[in-house]
Image 1 (spheres, rainbow, N blue to C red):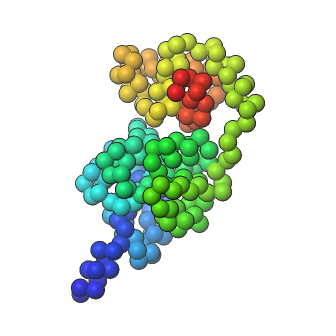
Image 2: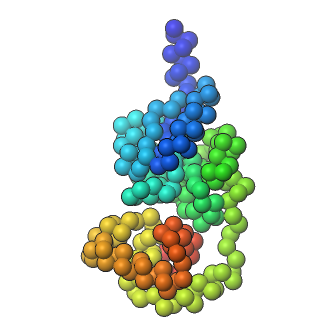
Image 3: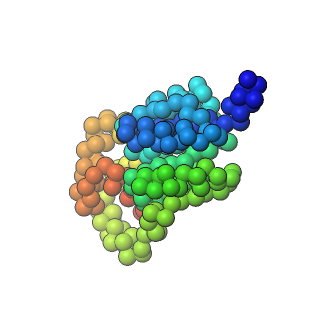
Length: 220
């Protein structure tokens, strides 16, 4: 009996935060076969993820970026601010270098494209403190030409729109941006729609990617 308790105590306690049930359950099932890991909680949004971190203080957090409401970067920043030894592996269906760079800056130890998740998870969980690992599917750094073209379009943004892009690049939601700028979330969303038109992009995730990747264009 004591041997079992000792073995259990040596396991790393894992929280999985992902809003896709099939992916989350599949990942939990696969990891449960590893005797060195123990899945202690699953979360489907940022609030549940933060609650699991606060209540359980796990060793490992497997974290999706695109969560309903607050995004995964908000969870990452909250967790690293309170548990600096937390081993965070960011998982994303968007294999973008900009996302990987932001995850690294916020203290994650790995950024894994979801298509590579199971094949890369062993390497991701072995990264030592201060290290960082990305899977092969993560795209290269952006080309100078793309930045230059976007810069011409960004010149048409108003000061308020630039502020919104800067804050969006920091992972803030429309509500949080509104509170920071003293405007309503609906007004923020209107500005975001106008920004998307000026930059000729479509989709919330694409706009966030640009806000992160080209932060220097917006004062970030």
